[in-house]
Image 1: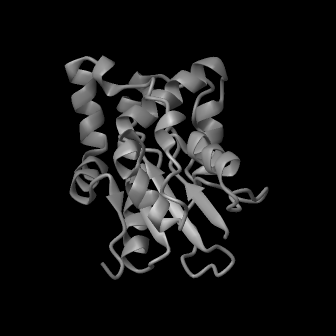
Image 2 (image 1 turned 90 degrees about the horizontal axis):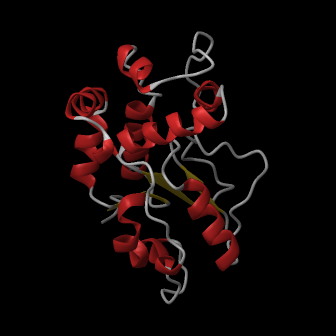
Length: 195
């Protein structure tokens, strides 16, 4: 079975992909696969698609940490997300993101995946922060033996919005208001088609 995992980044995508690559016989690798774009749901080459999401504020904090270690990381990530990146500086701070209300296309991408899941029985959305609660739902969706347990390998987030001061948190919440609201509405595991 061919399964592709997607995310807007900063959501445990590498962990999840490697977990299933190492612990199952499902095909999760494709050198041409860009996991940060929306894929046509009518693609018949792929059996199942899983969109891993996290609190977008946590994701952006993760982006900033990566950008400190590797200048231009955010600029390159915006390019992967098919977002404007030409005018983005080499070093991007939280202040820059807030000043420019940079949402990385997360709000739009998240809505697209919810809509796609509403129209396909081969797509689900899973919250990384709640992946342990979703273990059996995800394994059932992927038609994998439910004795496989993500818990033994799972790593808790390092980037957390709880470390932000109240004013910065509110500013981020305003930028990602729609995604935060929708995440609350769909819950940790979402697959609405034919339910």
